[in-house]
Length: 83
Image 1: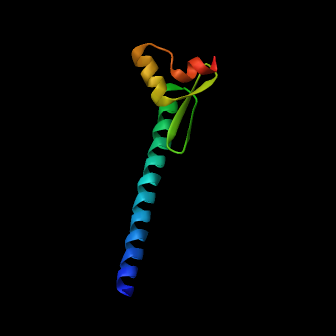
Image 2: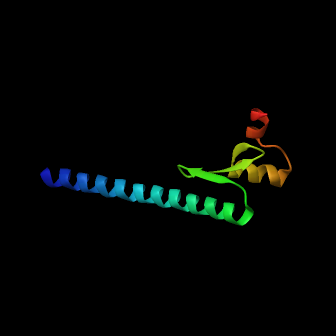
Image 3: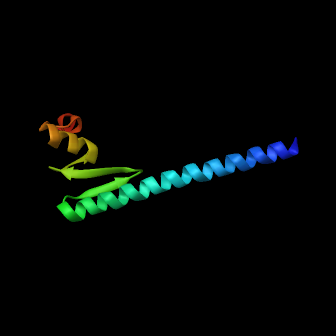
């Protein structure tokens, strides 16, 4: 029985490390791509917890919402709520 509990503990530990690594890589990638977007376009950006924000007309907007608004030529949900 002790071997089984040791196996479960080891499996849980490996699982937590793998999930933590995936989250860490994702956060690092978003931070890098957000800073790169700012360098290329000159738009002020900030990132936090895996989300990139753009400063558009004094309002911070998620990059995904901004891309959707530009592609459809519509204001994003956040822009409508803020103004």
